[in-house]
Length: 344
Image 1: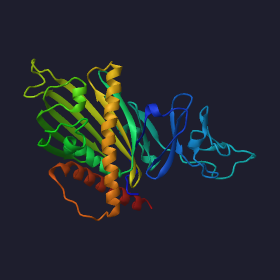
Image 2: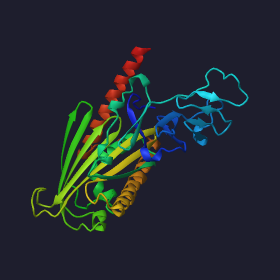
Image 3: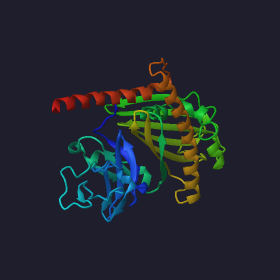
Image 4: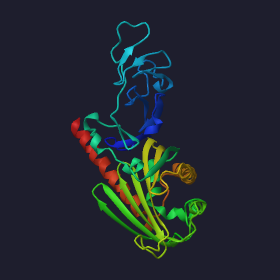
């Protein structure tokens, strides 16, 4: 499949990884994750070297993972240390181990050359657990190419239509939008003024019209951070009469499963009511509902694309961000392929 390999991809939110094996497919490869007795996380090939049964159907024993089919026992580095009826293990009694790192409640995996994996370069979504912020999030499996989600997150013109019953405002159709690109980073600023409150805002008791600024930052392979600031319409954040002063940061990371499916990891962070569990629960539920709307549409879009991938399409002004993000990925793919050929 066409996806960058020498990059950090999100594998899970940290709270998902426990001593119960968790199996997922990344870039067409089955991976199993679990926690050792000291809390450290492990990522191994989810394919027993004996009869290729998924190790995620097994169980963790201390720091090791036992295959649930014939009982082979794997240590955290992927080597078999016990097999039934064997005093001497055959050659090849091991599975692949992946570089794995956790930062700020997010777990990242390196699917390419392990020698190139530098934990320092893994994304740091610091808002998720930063003082003064409250974060919640989840993983959503979407049967669509991961770049369709990148398009979706960088073209927010769909808010007024697809999300009109949740997070969108009907009058959010003519924003001021600018983009800047710096090597492998793409940033857009979207300013929309005098917006009516969304249905979610009304549910929170917010009925004032607002001016909204959204800063969208894309970094490869497929990370999008959306920083959202809102003030009362016509006022500034410093204005003492401003009755709205809230900030949200939406964290998004898409990891390809296959060419037409992906894992969508998201987080919603806020700087208000940070100790209110009821607000956190409401944000988690309402965001999940909104992103299910995206899932419904994107999966339908993928089905239509699959019928005729060569069918023509047009580009609108809102597509500028998604198109530039794709150019970054395509350039990095070409560079990765050149490096791979040179190493042969």
